[in-house]
Length: 246
Image (cartoon, rainbow, N blue to C red; front, side, top):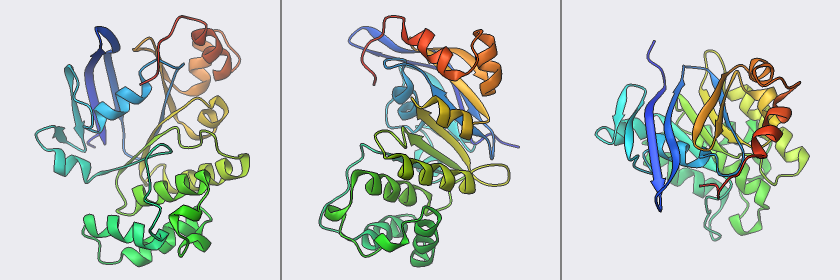
């Protein structure tokens, strides 16, 4: 079975500082993988290189067997990406916004898919709402819905529940549990929320200073560092000098 994502030897530097240092990352079909680490560890930069948004200084990336950047169109068609910091135009209704992206993916049944996806995350009542009326949490949920419309084999989320109210964050986690797992889509996410990672992830790739320092199931990563849980590991690694997250 072909992995949905294989990244080998990723390197990226900014202003002569190495942000990502020879990172390997792989995600199997239906697997839920979290990239965890303190600010400045290189999480977002790694994700953006895996998506082909940022070009690595060295290393290779393939999505569902399609290599970046040579086969970018085919690779990007097999991945959905969402992040709370991505903008949403104010003067558009949610159903119109989703329809635009559905048409970009060549979907004929975008209305039905949008309705089902909105229901999965408990926000079907927002279909006719204007984007300007949405809270930041609602916009995050709509962004995740947009990323899942074309049913990609890989869903990539950058801090999907950052700054969300607990009830909205729980709705996100419930929707992702329903959507991603064995026989369904694979999930790759970054998060600072160690409890969320322990609930969602089959495997954790822990970054510190741009390097992979652990790659295993959450409980085994905690044991590797002599901690009782991932929060212990996070606090230990966060005590080392860090730069600005990218």
